[in-house]
Amino acid sequence: MSPAPGAGADRRSTRLVLNEIFHSIQGESRHAGRPCVLVRLTACNLRCVWCDTAYAFEEGSETTVAEIVERVRRYATPYVLVTGGEPLLQPGVHDLIGELLDAGHEVAVETGGSLDIAPLDPRAMVVLDLKCPGSGMEAKNRWDNLARLKPGDEVKFVIAHRADYEWAREVVRGRDLPARCGVLLSPVHGVLQPQALAAWMLADRLQARLQIQLHKYIWPADRRGV
Image (cartoon, rainbow, N blue to C red; front, side):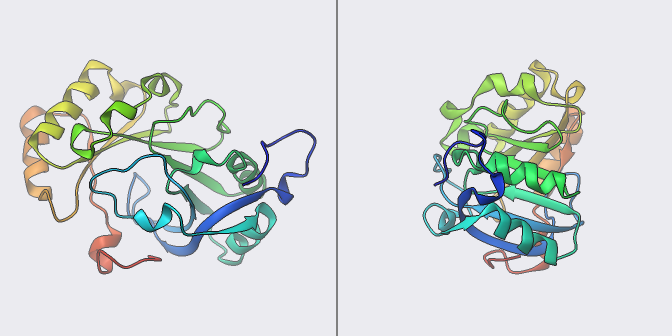
């Protein structure tokens, strides 16, 4: 792991534990369908019941920020998603995000919502994955993060069943999230049918976007690197 960013060090020399980098179509968020370079960092402090990237808990190798930025550059794609695992577990992620932004990339950061997002570069888009009860990780939500979200950021709820939906609906309305940022509701792939979630949202006139994991419809749902 790298030392904390700053302290006069060259951030390009910061080392991160990298799980994978690949070029794909963004499958989620309001940017779904866009060509994207996905940078997945290793390690996660959560264990969601429906997690589809458990391989990122431990697999990875140390890589410098300079090496990551160069690999991203070769894809000649402006939009970059930094994810995990939980990317904010590694303090050096802030050096990576800064370098990508300074290189002219549009950067989104997907985080599980249990760690403080305040240190993130305000130029980056945040996708905050707020954990519903069905994930088993509801108690880990850091609620003060919601106040730090910008209009261009998004909150994502992964919905496993009706109880998750009702919980998310009350959070969306009770905290007036649509007035603060984008709101995404995503059915757990292969568990909750999108038609059911769509019906609930329409019946409740919920101000949110239904999201499916587009990449799992383009490629096999368990394929890595897409």
